[in-house]
Length: 178
Image 1 (tube, rainbow, N blue to C red):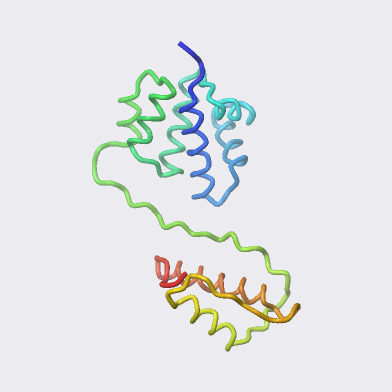
Image 2 (cartoon, rainbow, N blue to C red; image 1 turned 135 degrees about the vertical axis):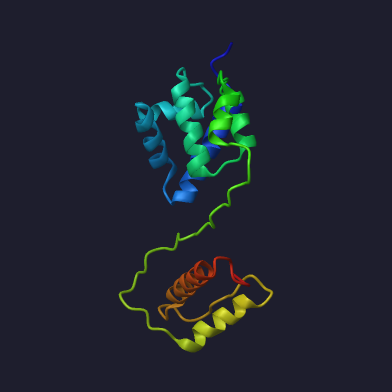
């Protein structure tokens, strides 16, 4: 029996990236957290991501639990992951982590990856701000902000994006146009 499985490595990468996305962290931070939970160096997870199988079932259990609880993966994903990992008690762990019953709702994703402002105070030009918002609410998905250099085009775009994110979060859904 080989100690490598490319599918395992691919599913592990997907899990780490999903957890990072949901928690707003980077993949290396998630890798360090998972490695710490099982008492390994972060470099060990790099090896597993390339397809090498962990020798200890406990490592697979910790990764599986984190993937389900923090990455919000499905029962089907967990079954594929455990099969690829050649985990000996797949059914028991699947039932423990994903009992059959009503599906739990996924929390809404919030994308707050806006760059930090490069200004200390935003001078809002209400007309320009309203025009950009109006443009976003139309059927076209892009708005072009035109002006001379140094007039605050980037600042306006950043503030509009922040406004749209806050509006989407407060309504619990994406608003029309953004």
